[in-house]
Structure formats: structure tokens, C-alpha cells
Length: 199
Ligand SMILES: Nc1nc2c(ncn2[C@@H]2O[C@H](COP(=O)(O)OP(=O)(O)OP(=O)(O)O)[C@@H](O)[C@H]2O)c(=O)[nH]1
Ligand SMILES: [Zn+2]
Image (cartoon, rainbow, N blue to C red):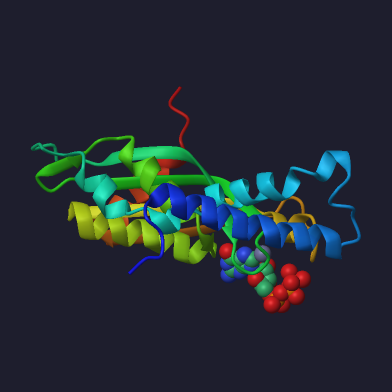
């Protein structure tokens, strides 16, 4: 049984735990955690970290199920240029970029906003770009049961920019395809549509 009475109590307790650890880190790097500008930093950092990892406490399938509508439309639906902000699991530094997602409905469409919400649920965890791509792909495939689903993510990794190899302009692309997108013509149509600027 959880030692917490409710979610609010749990949130306060976990924020305090993370805050204490940030306080220790600031101290260990040689800063004075009691100086004016830093006094509230452990708490701010704890809140930020818990926000950036809130995906562990969310259910992506439930989000999709909350807005699935019966509809006969069975052509490709594409949402492109969805902003992605995640944290790499190796350095806990951000990686960020865009996701392009398509599916071909199979009797049900989904509320459009739910797809970026699913991206956020998986992005707000410690991730590698490859697993993030597959988490989104498998969730859409298992929940919507579409005729096909495609996910492409293009991202830059701060751990390769600010430190380490220090490459400022490299972009990593990952992709996953299921169902009809495994056919080369359907996949090519999707790739053509996400690279075109229709405006
Ligand atoms: N495949 C994959 N690798 C990632 C991702 N994010 C970070 N990495 C890599 O994870 C690797 C960790 O390698 P290590 O050699 O253990 O860590 P490191 O000594 O900090 O490596 P450098 O970054 O090369 O300095 C690095 O090559 C990172 O570029 C990701 O999303 N996918
Ligand atoms: Zn990294």
C-alpha cells in the first residue's frame, strides 16, 4: 500500500526528495546554495525535472482511447512538425526536434491533439531517440489498430553539442513503420508529404 494519502501528498513528498538532491549537487559543484540567486533553485529544478519526466505517471493508451471516433475515412492522416523535447538517458541532457506521424484509420479516427499528447507522454521520460520512436509507434498501433502507422523523428542532442563530440549541426533521424507503411509506395507517399511545403 502507498504510504501517501493522495496524489498531492505524493507530489509534495517527491518534490522535496528531488529538491534535497539538487541542493547537494549544487553544493558539490562548489556553489553556495544559500546565496540569494540560488536559494530557490533546488525547488525550481526539482519541479522542472518532475515536469520533464511526468510521462512516467501518464498513460498514453488511455489518452488515445478518450477520443476515438467511429469514422469510415481510410486515407492517410499526417501530423507533421510536432515539437519534441526529451532527455537522453545517458547524460540527462535534452534532445529536441520534430516528429512526423501518420496513420491510416481502420474504422476509427482519433482526436488530432491526442497524437502530440502521446508524443509528450513518451518524450517526458529518460529516453533514447530510437526507443522514443518505437514507443510512439507501438502505442498508436496497439491502441488505434490502424491499417498502418508511421513515425519519423528528427532531433539534435545537446549531449553532442554542449559537450562530448561538440557537433552543432548534426541531426539524427529515426523512423518506424507498421502495416501498410511497410509497403514502399505508401511509405514513399508519406515521406514525400512530410518533406513538401504545401503552404
Ligand atoms: N543511440 C543513441 N545514442 C544516444 C542517444 N542520446 C545520446 N546517445 C549516445 O550515447 C552514448 C553514450 O556513450 P558513452 O561512451 O557511454 O558516453 P560518453 O563517454 O559520455 O560519450 P561521448 O558523448 O562520446 O563523450 C554517446 O555516444 C551519445 O552520443 C540516443 O538517443 N540514441
Ligand atoms: Zn546524451
